[in-house]
Image 1 (cartoon, one colour):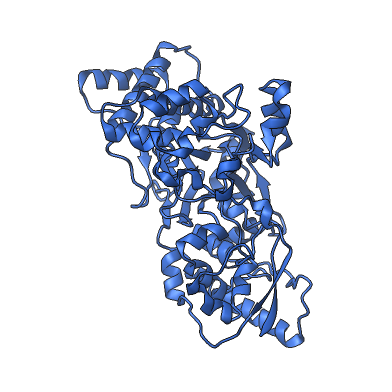
Image 2 (cartoon, helix red, strand yellow; image 1 turned 180 degrees about the vertical axis):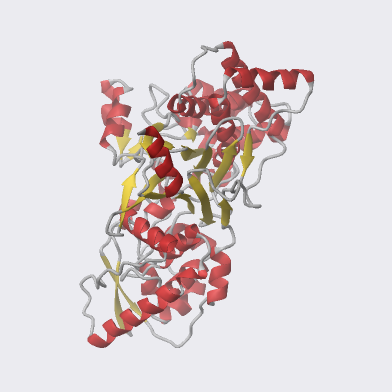
Length: 554
């Protein structure tokens, strides 16, 4: 028998705890003493797939942490904060690994790349292109992503959306939000032209050119409903015409808030079609965070609702890389956000608003789309549930009223918007759901992506983290690192390369194939416990065009 100490960071969970017996199919890895390599990078998953309002709706592990009668179904991350977890494991020669081609097949299954086309042999855009990818932990994945070029106005839109309590809300927001933003940016004359085309039955002007992976689908059944809501919005914009040029910041805020309002209204009104009626309720009762970028020349706007993040990769004069945050998490770790929530409710509720780092003790993000259980009055919730389909009325989660629920709404979808003027040294932008940021520090993300895009690697001293390492072992680590560098370009997609590091990095900061293989081999019921869905978009900027823009402004 060998005694193995498994180092686990404070926000991470040992693979097998005393409260969680090991599944039989995992014992070959345990006997192998190999499970320790997984343990040191495992992290507690945020979500569990609840894409429909089934009996499982109440089981979402991270975003929601219900009280008392649902408490046994939830395991808050804090309960697993161990630094070292020691177990006895037997060693046998059995090994079950994915081969490198199998690992690559999994990692590359959802990757997508887009290069901005050139005109007369030149790229006149400040964006060279982008890479995106997703790695599921839930089945199906609850994250979504979107990217599109604005055709009637200038600029490009890119966004990541992190669903909770199912994928329905994230799916709807990924389909609809960019249309609301594009319409918000349109001049009055163009809105009139579009409305006249609809009235007369003529073909509409295309508003967006989507850049989509084949797996990024649109709901055909709901397209008419979604179009009618969008049309009502642009009709109101026509009526409210002020004659002033639309401000991008204002357009982003209005689009976020209006879409969330439409999601709520559609669920209240319902639909005579039973499928659509159930769909709009699923969308409203689930939730989603959103982090969206609008790039127009050197003007970069980030609109963020929730805890996904935007990070700028900056190349310093000495060639090194630094990270600049362009968003702030809307959760209990953000003191300004906690104060905002407290300011919006009576002082008598101050102690119950945020408990265990959750809104009303239940929800981790303090801003989100959907989540009508934190927005509607109790009377409205009961009326909609009682008059809704049986799947909704028979569900424990939808009938559950949050504790200390006195002065709704407690949640908003209003984004925080940050504007940044791009500079030649701003080389790339990373948009990612929190599945990435839980496993990697932003500075490591900036370095890994920067070195991947430039092909120049600034080697850091190998850190052994307090381990006793012999000279022979150190030589092996250096040899392994050199081999890893030579194989970096097996990834043709920067987002894929980042996911490889997020899942496969060992305690020395290098990708360990064995660790990567095991993490990708975990069955669905375990994968959700060790990491969240990861969705990443890496946008590469055109320094020459950005420099030319700057020269024109001088």
